[in-house]
Amino acid sequence: MFNTNGARRAALGAASAALIALSLTACGEKENSGTPGAGPTVTAAADSALAGKVPDAIKADGVIKVGTDSTYAPAEFLDADGKTVVGFDVELFNAVAQKLGLKAEYESAPFDAILPGVDSAKYEIGVSSFTINAERLKSVNMVSYFSAGTQWVTKAGNAAKIDIENACGKKIAVQTGTVQFDDITARSKKCTTGGKPAITIDQYQAQSDATAAVFSGKNDAMLADSPVGAYAVKQSNGSLELVGEIYESAPYGYAVKKDQTVFAEVLKEAVQAVIADGSYQTALKKWGVEGGAITSSALNPAN
Image 1 (cartoon, rainbow, N blue to C red):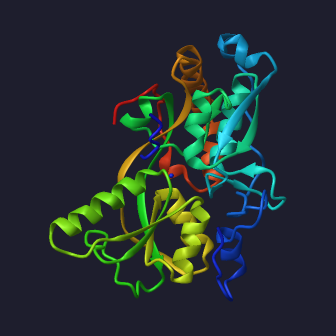
Image 2: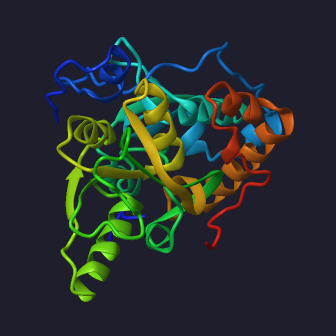
């Protein structure tokens, strides 16, 4: 039921400090995958009418418990203290929660464990760059708030001669449980059907590990959501480069339980409210991802 397809260490040698911050992982809660966006924290004023629509079970303690995979800079990752979850996804959802009179509390989890956690009520919402697709909509309600596509990344100079339309025989990194895994699996099947070598697909639990694998040369390239790929290249100080164009753009969505339709509707209204008051655009611009802005939120949109 919980097919979440759609989003540990690598020895990097003398890597630059910027890329170490981006891609190395450490034990326990010491994951750090990027640098915070510049500028003041974005906030939004509570809307009493919207807050009044939040189901009692969710607003009773004034807190909404969020499941997130904190390895996906610049969307969600751990700050330098190794504990605080930051990123454009986080800052934007904090504003949405504030609009509903709630405080968001984040719990880091593996990406492919979040939707089952939402269904079991371990989390009241999943905020983790989830691409909205038909498979996910079978198990959760999803409220759109951003748009992203897939982007390929390789080492600067493209010595591996990566062609996104013909990666047969290459070693490609993806994060477990993401739409990119489905994408590269289909491409590999096309290779073998055409009599060409299969693509070697390496799955990583953390996106930062996939990035590190490309930097170290273990993998020839990686696939990631477009803002994540662009951020990796920006943080690499010239060590990585983008390959090809962004494709298959689709909305990201907040995930709530399938039986929480009332809350999902209110959540959609809250996203629309932060778009209207400008805090939405401020948050995205702070992190340099305003290219993925939407003008209207939707509940369970069809792709």
